[in-house]
Image (cartoon, rainbow, N blue to C red; front, side):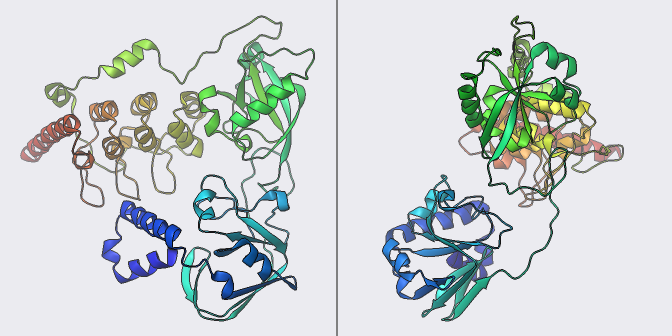
Length: 470
């Protein structure tokens, strides 16, 4: 499928200028291949030898359509096709994982499935008798009949970001990690949460758990619940929450609703902190969810005026670039973008108070405002337009050349469109395909289209007035 796409794009590059069209092409080609199964007889043209042992009979027995050779855990947008029940998988052991896949297993990888674990070996020899499609590190090509030998060439040290303190080599991410579970009570948290080392010292160790570093906190909660049944002398109830003691200088709580979006390795290294709503003396307390706005704020957001006349009065001209006086703070953090994606107000406020820039960007130059608009987090948008430099409203990404208002319009975020326009976002900015935010709205949403077009007209009139004065 990858080879078909590559050759079609090379022949007609102008037909493959849209990510949506490219995905549709892949979907159609994948559906066709699922039915036709063109390479279901692959084993008739390929022989496989691993560490001197002939593995071809096993390939034929499993009716393999493709063979995958891995020396890292991930493949194809983060899937993990190797079943660790057949042996651990490490990046630095010089071992190659050989995996067999059928046409039906390929889409299941995206849902967490695995392929057939053929073997683990130090050397592999593949002999082909027919021209077949191959893919090497993402690059598709046609391979004429030949013999290929795979083995470890050499090793090189790599730099990697290691969270928390400590020394030693970075562990393989696919290995299970054992962490101590530390219990912190509410009064202790309120007293020491601005100092994560101090709050870690106050934590009472109530046991240990062993889990995959990539486990989301929902799974980890189930492990701690089982551990809780075995604990004597510490009653921390059912309403406890996790504490992130890594991302920022201070510790902060993770709301229960966000647990599926956080992972064990993201919030701890050797000690996992959990927070009980009770006080150390035993009296109960209650959590306040900073990520949820007060009822008055919700009402205020829902009643943002949509009147063109009102918006025209609040309009002031901005340009889609970093203007003079719009400085980026020295410290940037991926945590700012993560908080915007998840709608985690507590994390965002904590990072901002800690001195991290609200203008932080990722590799595609998207800001927190882009992500807040994309995922519809009104509280995040309100905070950013109030606290961040004014230029954030018209900053464009490198991927599509779009502002946060483009994202809000494309994903039908009506209230957020109103909030951004009221904050001074320009409706005249065009993306790389020459489209304004109003042109990204789906045709059936006439209310939003009419609103954006009316605001665009007011901005055009204001622009003409400025030019006339000049």
